Picture 1 (cartoon, rainbow, N blue to C red):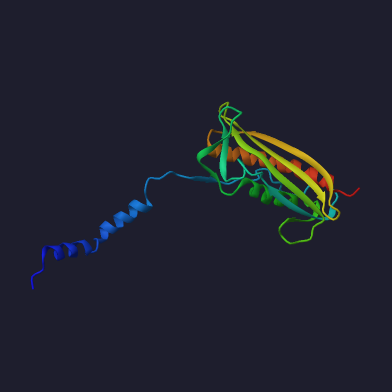
Picture 2: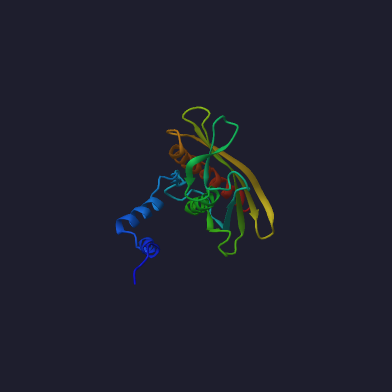
Amino acid sequence: MRRGPVNTARRRLLRPLPLLGAAGLLGACSLGSGPRSDFYLLRDAGAPGAAAAGPRIDAVLMVSAMAPPGLYDSDRMVFSADGLSRSYFQFGYWSERPAQSLQTLAEARLAAAGRFRQVVSSTSGVRGDLLLSLRLDELYLDASRAPGQVWLSVSAELIDWRDRRLLGRRAFRQSASVPHAGAPGLAEAASQAMGALLGALADWSAATGAPR
């Protein structure tokens, strides 16, 4: 029985792609020239090598940190072209949200200072005596004057968690000059500003949380 032209054409359509052709299609899907995303780590560039001097406070310090909903509650890096407005970098991202980095770095710095019996996360399940509540208010590159300056602002409250009493409240603001413009400069300068701010925060927390 002769096969008509329709069946012959259908067989050609169902024939598998050659290996090289299939690989080429996969490459076009996965290795296309899409927008690049660069991720940067926010560090504590001023972490001390030894415990800070001062009497030890026999209390468990819990640490929490957050950012208000909006611009800074994101992993995107922020800059200001005119010193007033705020914009996101097109390709610059933090490796994690800065508020989460703030909490991790604050816990590590306060633990290294050795002033409290123990320093833990507020979500660890450990029963604490004091709560240090941090809020990331600003973290951005002011590029209105070259090469630019990073500004970091954090609000802190220290609470006696046993009787829900506010012991102290303070706003911390720190700046650092960027070594070069762009997202890499922002990451480097922000880590410098974070180190200086955490040093002041550790001193204030110990002085405010000390028994009276």
